Length: 249
Image (cartoon, rainbow, N blue to C red; front, side, top):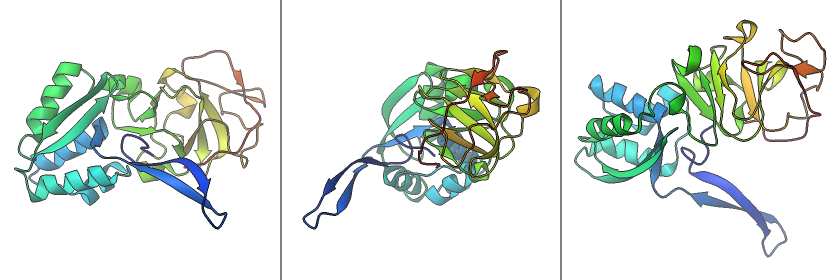
């Protein structure tokens, strides 16, 4: 899901309260930070003459919105003259600016034109794994920092054709939901089309070490050796690592 840019709450640590119990600290996003899929969804609704709401955009994109972004999106429709600060982010960088419901289209289109980061692979921000429904970074895009046990929640179930990994970690695609089935490794900084056998196949994804429920011997269907998986645009299999426990969504 969209942590940091779209999800405004992130666990930063735990401390013991007076009763000795662990208390989780959270950080709340103050300024709404929007990535390209959110911007695109808002533009589509506005062009269609539909009043924008946070629930409408969350439903259209499958992305979880922070409190800051939820508030801003609701206000765009309710009070289009009201000005808000927003940070726009794509693969070319970020820009903090002022925006209203009436200026949303012109401001975001100007940002896209200036940065050149609203098409293809350039839509994918730093620190995310991005999945695309088209070849070479085209089509619908969804993005992840941790992963998703069910890609239907992001409207990209069994639809991924190309990928871009900008997390600095390996990511793993699965042929079944809940991080099960055959696996396919996306190495750090790797981008490109998936092999034909893996296109429109992935049902879940995890970023980082494999979950404990995943066998280290699962393989991508196009990889003959039983202990290896393949990476986009790579003819050399990479050895799967022994799984360790991480969150699966």
